[in-house]
Image (cartoon, rainbow, N blue to C red):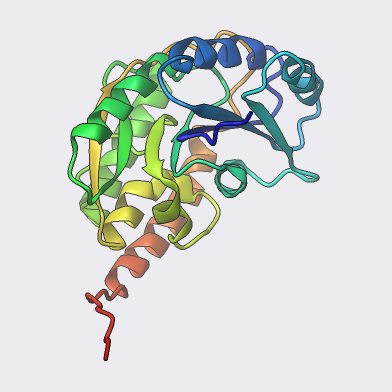
Length: 243
């Protein structure tokens, strides 16, 4: 690709062999002719044919780049490594299971173009979730508790589709599962965030990598940690002194 991208679409995947080709095709359909972009897939040490299918797709898709984890490291690390590898100043993220709709990315870009300069994160909001009842119930309570503790004014932090400035993201403190707390972390850094209603779809292939109990146990520790970070943060304006 000769033209530097203005947008990098980062997609973390682990054992999503049947979702790779359809999702890549949707990303291309949504963005070709709209913006100079690249797609950065991060294969989190998949044990199926995910990596092989990505390599096959690369032959006919100059926009597609692939980063491979040599050991399984989780979604937050995959997102961070994808952002570090990205060449564009703005990042859009998608979950690799196909439940996020790439057709929503142009709408997020339009919201960014109309927003103030200090808005650095546009977070997808799954107004009509297509998950199981137990998953929706668990998410509802988790969002309520998180919102009460962190006061991040965000109705849905678990949605995989987000648009954010690369530099602002890389300036955030890194920890495992940080991708679930991006609005609070961005606000802690002094930036504004906006929630944008997006489409949400049923998973058509593969299986979920999470369960409600596992999320709850990890989530309690993460909430306490993020709450501590917010309480201990300190910001001040700066200016350069010249002679």
